[in-house]
Length: 258
Image 1 (cartoon, one colour):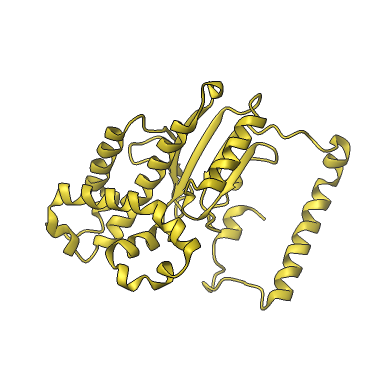
Image 2 (tube, one colour; image 1 turned 90 degrees about the vertical axis):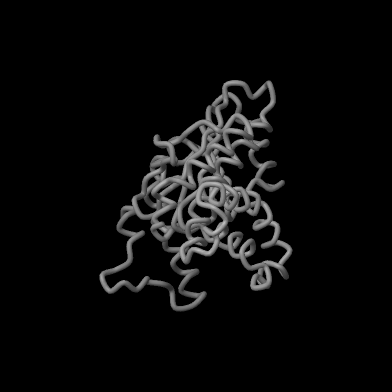
């Protein structure tokens, strides 16, 4: 079954989910059996291939954004690192450094991919706007670690909105949605910038790019057009991006007309 068919809800609008853990386990087993049957011939003929991905993709864990399917990539084409909010923590960075060290002959691209409607970004926005009501974040060290990575982008987006529309923008009923929309793009760009700074001279020839996957349209793009754009080259480019986002229709659609 193709991705679009599986992604969309049935006609009644209710997702078809396993009734319990036992049925969920059965779904996994049956799914692997179908995959094994389809791949039995090619795999048996080729044997176990050496890893040779042409790209690394750092993306979010969101179940609606399966990275290989988003890029229509087959096995052994992408080295995928997924973590909530596509944040660049130690484990994620270590995985990427491993890929750079071991797959240099085939590796050409490092991609940071955010997505619209990101729950991790929404949690960071909530923590930023109402820290007293974010107990779930405050009392979980692991969740807090993810949110803390994103708060920098949220704060930057808030400053950009304030500079563009004035301090009163924070009182707009749609402010939190506008802030989250801008923060998704800024978070992705900031992580790409950070990742680009981690490259060493021996990584020459590997390019860092970034983009955002639109869950509704299925397209990858950036606020400035194009599918994927190079990582920002400096802090001023990130500041300029924040101001561009603050005035972009994608963000301002959430704000009340002035």
